[in-house]
Amino acid sequence: MDEEIESTALPSYFSHSLEGCRSRLMSTPAQTELYTKEMKKRKKRETDRRYRQKMKVNASLSSTAAAHHETAVQETKNQLAMTIIENENLKRAVEELRQVILHLTSQRELIEQRLTFQLCYLYSLLFSSLPFLLWTKQTAVQETQNQLAMTIIENENLKRAVEELRQEIFLLTSERQFIEQRFNTIYTELEKEIECVRAAAEGFGEQRA
Image (cartoon, rainbow, N blue to C red):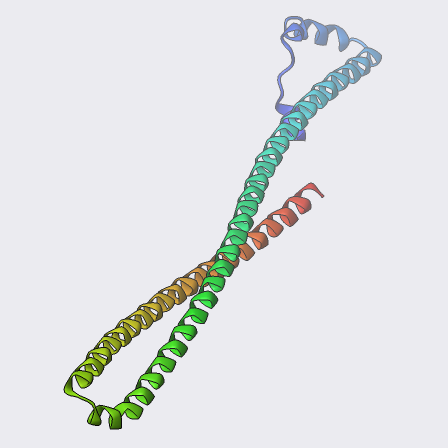
């Protein structure tokens, strides 16, 4: 700063009569000393003015940087809030899928129980009817065979229904796993964003300190 002061030119209203003032002030030591003090005061005022102007510029730059930083922090907070809302929605979706899977599982168990009961009943009916079928007419045998064929067809239909339910349960299980993986990924990214926000906030606090 001293070098800057030394190289600073005098204002224009002093330059016109500078040589004349020097020739007159050099006449006595007291006048020379007074002139020197006056010049020092003027240089000091000019230096103070430059310093104040520089401080204003620095303060303006600091204010602008702080505003940009606050904007970035606010945007990160908004993204964090949106991610939290999305996570809550995903949690609800996963819970709904779990309820659907439980319902389908209970339905499958009921269908399997029904199928087992019908098969046992048909086999018991078949074996209990064998002596009677051997004794009755051919028409009775044919009717029983027709009933058995219809029952077998119904059993095949039930088996297909059970298989379709199993496929649907498998699909729902795959979707649930995908949603859980997505939830874990979003949760991990959210933790990283929180750490970045904390680090940025700490850095901003250190700068202000």
